[in-house]
Length: 115
Length: 117
Picture 1 (cartoon, rainbow over the protein chains, first blue to last red):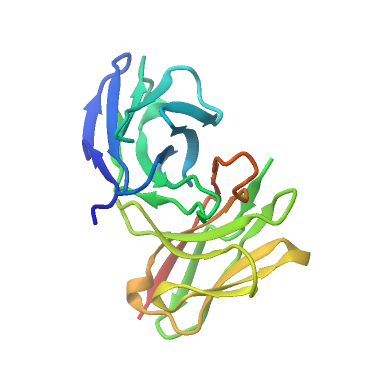
Picture 2: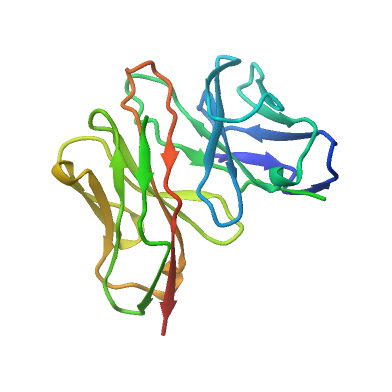
């Protein structure tokens, strides 16, 4: 049973560039959440996708956008990169169902460095 | 708004000693509560979770946590720490499903555990 997979694992960009991160959820899961974890901090909620729509959003600017595909995989896009966007980006999948406990399963993350 | 406070940024314990990591949450009702562990450069792994019922929950790797509604706390404990437990630990809170169906899980800032021989 494949867990949550993310790509790429590491990448380096320069200020002003754009980046796309990808995530495949755990088999059977239908919801993807994205988190940003800055060095020494806890994960901060960016947004959540279910049924190909953004369902909830944290306190992040519009430069952060996403997409969910029919196979439940997801992308996180960040435009006009700033130095402060350097972080570990975590994807987590879960299952939206009344019987679900809603626990999150995390990938290993994509480490983004902005120079 | 939901929030989580982990008052201890860094804790050092000797191998074999007991451990307690503190967590306090703020939420309008009884939430779902979680503890996750993160090794350096890795993603987060679920240690245990509380949804309802017995307020003392058991998790993996010998960890347990106790939910205390009156104190809005969900402290993590382990009777005897092993060197391999050195990692960062995150407490998290999420709404009960059925309240919109979508889960925004909020994490604390984490407690880094160092284990000395």
